[in-house]
Image (cartoon, rainbow, N blue to C red):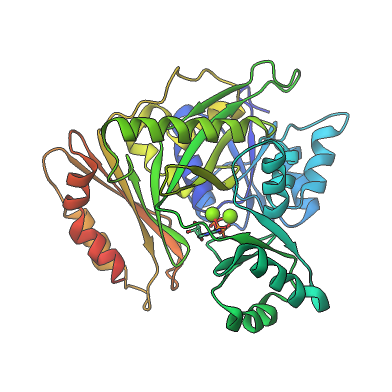
Length: 404
Ligand code: ATP
Ligand code: MG
Ligand code: MG
C-alpha cells in the first residue's frame, strides 16, 4: 500500500470523474468500484480498481481490501456491508459514515430525524401501501390541501420518485403509479426560490466530535426544470445588499445545523426552499459532491467541492473560510436531447464564447447522450460582473440549453 492512503470509491460516474480530476494533482490514489468503461475509470488508471457493481457486497469487500478508507459517489447503496467493514476488528473507515448514508437514503426518515432535532422542514406524513393507500392520501389532502407532493421514500433522484397531486382527480394515477412503493406525503412548499449550501464536515475517527468542523460554501440558487437541477447561480439572483447578506447567513447557518446532526467526514449538499417571508426550509441533503457545487471548481479553485471531499476524508488542513475568487458564477447542465447530437450546438457555442472578465468552462462526462441524461455541464464565471450581468452574457447558451 502506498504511503498516501488509497481512497476506495463506490461508483465511477461523473462525480467520481471530477473527484479523480481533483485527486490527480494531489497524488491521491483513488480505487474505483464500477464497470471498466465508467467515466471516472477512463481518466484514472491504477492497479487498485475493482470491476463490477457497488450493488454487490463481495465487490465492496474487494474494494475495501484495496483501500485505506471508503467513500461513495451515490447514496443509494446497501449500507449493511459498509457497517460491517467500518466496525470490523481491522476496520476500513467509511466517510461519510454508513450511519449518515443509511439515514438519508430514506427521505421520510431523514426529514423525521431533522424535525426531531428542531430543524425547519415541510410537514410530512406516512402513506400506506396497498389497500390503505387511498384513505391515507385523502387524509394527507385533508391536512395539507391541494396540491401536495407524494414522494417515494427511497431510490429517488431527479424527481423520479415524486408525484404532484393537484386535485382529487390525480389520486387514481398516483395510486396506480406508486401503489407498490413505500411513500409519504409532503406539504406543498410555495417557494420563491430554491437554494443550496454545500458544507464541508470534518470529524475525528478515534474521538467523534473532537475535531468536528463545519465549513459552508457561499449559498447558491438552483433552478430545476422537470425536477432536474438545470441552472445554478452564485450569488442567488435578485438578492442584493443586506437582504442577500441576511439570507446567505441564515441559509448557511441552517445548512451547518443540519450537517452537524450527521456522522462522518466529507462534503454535503443541503437543498433548501426560500419562502416569500424569507423563511428557509430544508428539502433534503446529499452526502456527497452535488450538482449545485460544480461551479466551485472554478469559483473556489483552491478548495473545490471535490478537493474538499478528499481533504475532509484524509483529515487534511482546511481554510478558515471559503471565499470565491470571482464575483459571480453560474452553471448550466448539459442534458442529452431527442437526438444523439442535440447538445452539440450548445457545446460549440460555449467553446466559442470569449469576453473580457468572463470565464467559460465546458465539462463533458464522456457519457452517451440519452434524452434528459446529465452528460456534462458548463460553468461561467464573472471576474467583476454581477450575477445579472453574468446571466445576460450567458443568454445565448441558456437559450441553446433550453432548446436541446
Ligand atoms: P434529487 O435529484 O435532488 O435527489 P429528488 O428526486 O430527491 O431529487 P426532491 O429533491 O424531493 O427530488 O424534489 C425535486 C424538486 O421538486 C425540488 O427541487 C423542488 O423543485 C420540487 N419539490 C420537491 N418537494 C416539494 C414540495 N414539498 N413543494 C414544492 N416543490 C417541491
Ligand atoms: Mg434526492
Ligand atoms: Mg433534491
